[in-house]
Length: 477
Image 1 (cartoon, rainbow, N blue to C red):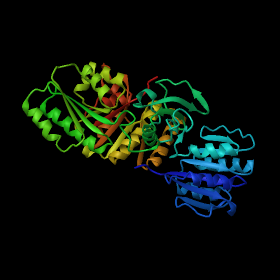
Image 2 (tube, rainbow, N blue to C red):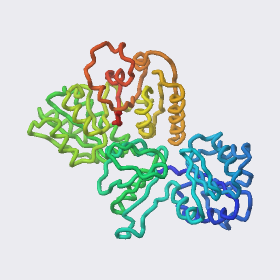
Image 3 (cartoon, rainbow, N blue to C red):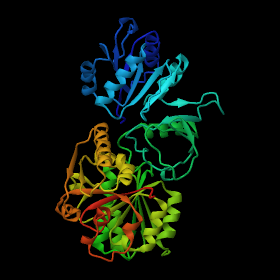
Image 4 (tube, rainbow, N blue to C red):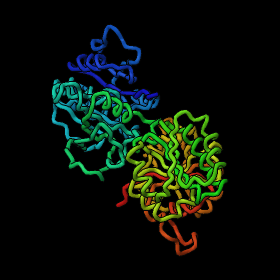
């Protein structure tokens, strides 16, 4: 179920009534609107139930604070008749909210340096462009191609599971991203480009498929393992796994499949060794309705099997044991595919109470930050952030603010712990956790020294097999 977005609208002047009516005309009831106004003439005869009206001067910080503190807004429209009033209102908003998309109707040639402010000029742009920038309102090219709406424009919202994803990691079946705009500039489209909040993408495909993509992008929770894929993939090599090991993998795959929003649990069996194992798998999967069991009788290597299965299945998460992750051929193939890994530890996914990250690399964790909260939301856990490794002070403040803002958008509890203690000791103290890590190549390189000689908590964490871990692909520079 999609969460409604809260939109703040601040209006005054001759355009106010027209703009408000346009917003009401486009009202899909997927948003909640807080309207601040000063003149009763702009108020419509019929007030939609998802609109709340406040009458006061928005240049008053004390009054504006009441509305800003009451509700978390994701977007704001400002249309006022006075240039100084607009500048004062923006200053007031920024005193309370560092990250909120603000759209301004400008008649004075305003020049404001703020990555989260968009400036629009003129009545026509106001009516046709500003409203279309609001969340939960798709923008279709109605007079191009077959004129059926096969081209769509989408604004990537802050908190979307598609934010901070690089384009090559997004499964694009029956649709395609063909243009990307950032800060009013058309970027050269490359597979390695990361989508960021407030980016605008143009996509092409069948109208029905585009609406599905649109609904997935604008949602801020319940999407993982999208945008990587829709299914969980369990690889069982019964020759290299003991009976307790394959039973554990099967059980945890069932558990994570039930907890996450996935279409199918795919079980790929190779080297079927005995009747007992096969019967056990069959019986254990009886209660899973959406499953697909595939058996390889030809003893093909893992990379060959996976290469074929990637083509046939919409795989978004691969389940592997820490024993299988020791095989270099398996690792190299997974690194190339850029698909998340669920590394099954010794504890149970059903016992998890906290989702944990050890914050050390700002760029890596910024990329996976929306997914961290998405997973926590689906698993109904709190999010604990260990800010242990030293980071540049200013950057540290920014990344922690980033996580706190995301926690509000996802309506998730967050706990930030800052200290200078040894991360490996801190991790070993944790109980009933799921750790989320960025997928890095050096995780799979041979260690030549004791863990206490390493300061990178990602490497230290990956080497511990006690906890379940979800490892998310990133772009490494």
